[in-house]
Length: 503
Figure 1 (cartoon, rainbow, N blue to C red):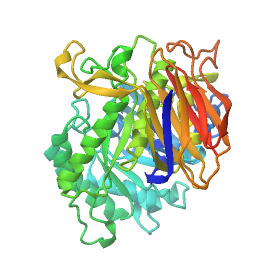
Figure 2: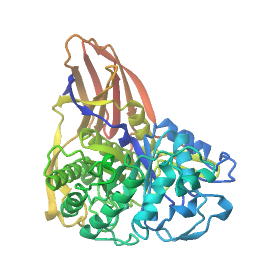
Figure 3: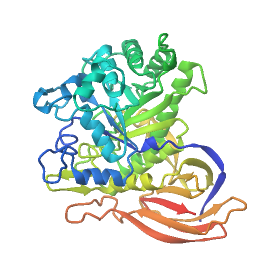
């Protein structure tokens, strides 16, 4: 029998619920044809799909990032004011036409309807620092100035109060409009950060990081961490976050179309990338207590798997990656899954006449409803297996000599706690075929835990997925557990995602 010992009084760090974020952009099927469908019978007066809004609210989305490849050639001024006057332009990133009917005010309204905080990425490809500064003014200023007055003239007297902004998107990449090397990006980002903080010194800024390139991260943080705004003394001196993006997809990724065994290392891969990025931040700032945190503001486990992506297996890898963010939540403060609606992730699949909640949707519902406020200590003796993990995720599968051996626990475990003392135990059994009978012991004197509820996402076939014919083939099942003398006995099924609430 496997043993998990929980130490509720050993509080490791707070958990920021902004790791429960998602991502949108003008990608066909995501904003247009997904969340935003004016004229559809299921849309509200602003053109937002009401069923999508409700599904997003159900998973308690904390924040939504509006950026992506599209943002590197997006001029915000095109998407404000009367819709009949907004220009149609080429969508350079996605080979489409952008009608600009979804702009700043629409995005902020969408976030408000969901109950999420807005995050905006500025154009550092074809845009200028002045343009970004003006956008911050338009969103946040209460002064009698040009762009604040433009917002008012467009019908929005009160500011939008957008606190979180991204300094560009994937500016290291050749597919990005106006891509730059690390030195060029850092120099340009300083000008953008300076200008944007002149418009609002209270905003939080995320710089572009590269999760597989410590040299890029060092150069960017070294330059931006000494940012000072002499005429705005309250602006602070630093960027607040460094971003990471990763999709195990494409011909250069070892995880593309990889077997089940290799993908069992995905949680450890994401965890190690987070640690290495944090190490680069500390080295660049010469400060082990640097306040700059890591933001996984684009991620998902998709892998071009011949139409089988939206299975229980993909949900297991999604939960494994989420657990990695929780485990290192001391330094991961925000994360945004890409895309939650349609696109290359698609926990919500949207058609003209309805939605389908796919397996991954229930992972986000589980974390969104049960994730606690604090990470607490645990010890377990779960079985481990030694597996090959890619060096940086970008080598061909046949090139095994570039792998690293890692001992991977078959039970991936985190324990969190709420303000009221309730414990939330997240356990992902990544074994494809082995169940684990487990004893959970709560090591806390003076507190008697008497109630436990097990929530499980499972199907006997890890390739099973939801469909229009079987929309609940994968969902959350609930079961009462006996909790006696602070001990719980439970069986964790093979390839299952579990959460136990103990009170």
